Image 1 (cartoon, rainbow, N blue to C red):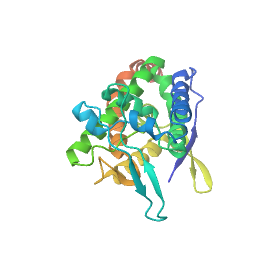
Image 2: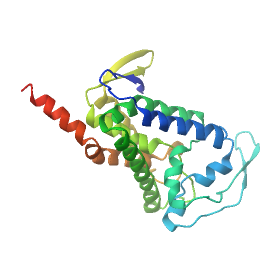
Image 3: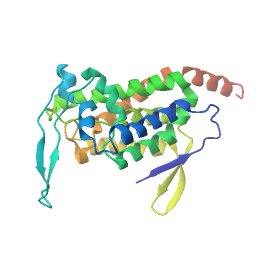
Image 4: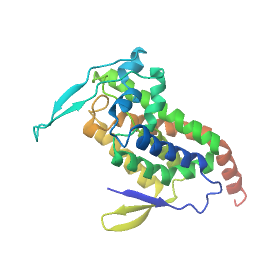
Length: 255
């Protein structure tokens, strides 16, 4: 598996303040509001629940006591909590929640590498709108796939992965030949973005087949990843019009 660790930023002209702001918010929410993952009551209050989005109603379920099948130990698991905002807004709040340090770290690594270049191409405002809009659309992809496939609609979903999938799609469209530094076994190599992101998307599709919606393979909401990526492909040119126009004019001078 190729693990991206960096890319070529020599053509970046603006400071990616929005990208860093998004990263900071994700980290601060996880540490202080989710208490590094320990505050499940907060997490289950503001995660997106397909049944709530589909019905427009806030759903509260009782706490449970679960038993680990391997150790036999029991532990409490909170149910769905009262949401302090409209349930539809959880499509936004859930984008800033994470299930653990690994979940947070993996998402932020991808955002650090790929988000700054997209912000450079789109500008601060367009990048923020693109990120949030695609994140919401990715969440809706998960919700409707859950409904269509008849999966459990009470399982909450959270994470920035849907929005970041759109960022990856945008990066692939705008910078297909930009070199991405990846860690492969014991080596660090540079590979065109088209290959790195393309392989990542194929991995999402392969792992998501037959498990889209509900409790997905490994607890991963592949429908959100795939949906976010597709919407990113569809919308990136609209949000990067100025960048594409300038690049087209620049290329025309050398014909």
